[in-house]
Image 1 (cartoon, rainbow, N blue to C red):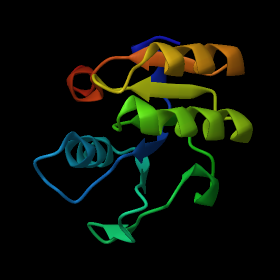
Image 2 (tube, helix red, strand yellow; image 1 turned 180 degrees about the horizontal axis):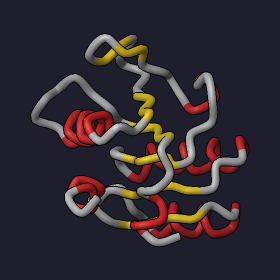
Image 3 (spheres, rainbow, N blue to C red; image 1 turned 45 degrees about the horizontal axis):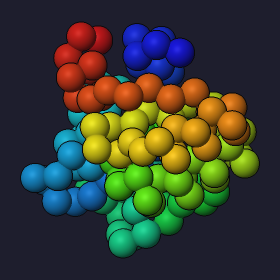
Length: 126
């Protein structure tokens, strides 16, 4: 799917969400919420972010997201791609710096669609 099509899907999980206002994990989480998306933060280091329950992984979510936005290093993202595929999640948005050849190969092998772009930039056009 193209960026524009993914942005029409309204349930997202942000892997690497954080309370640190300087980090992209925070900025992306907040921007999606401000645009009316249902957004689930994923980060094992937090129990909540801005008063919202934070989840350890995708398997803990109360519902499956349409899109997983990854804001973590590729070595951590490999597990996320595997978990998403196992859960039947078909779309992963890869932020700049989250991509590796190994990760892309795994996503392709597991039938997970990927987009490589900055969601903060893309949301400016929604």
